[in-house]
Length: 162
Image (cartoon, rainbow, N blue to C red; front, side, top):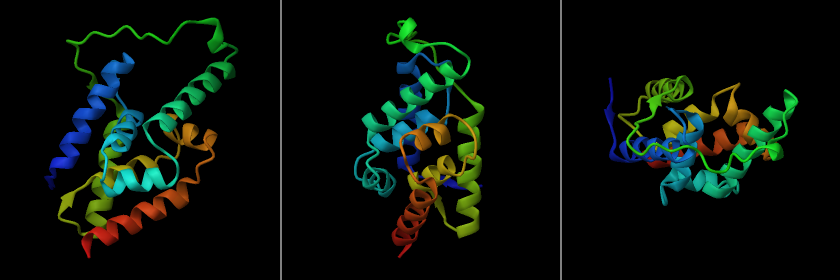
């Protein structure tokens, strides 16, 4: 349907490494967001940086979301040592549903804009379009206006076409 651009392949591989480092059996939207934040110099990374969302800030927001989710079911994160995930460096994380939806939504943006190639900014918009899930909750806890961030991402996408 569309030709993948090199930066998207790099982000997909970085997202896989993020998932592996977290000890996750699946690659999810949060891993894609962390990978975008790590891809220095891309318009998508610059949009995140303009909102104060570097890799570390996103990681902190995700940790806060995890702690709050546990508190929602009566479990305190401080009662457990979860800082060292059980990594298996030979295991390749599978694509999780939220990551698949990021690519689906990114493809919808690509088609709606009649763009010719998938870019990191399409993926960022795919992440930001999620209405429920870990990433929307984490960004809300971090005080991020997702609508404003998405508007900035759309502007960056438009600017890259000019």
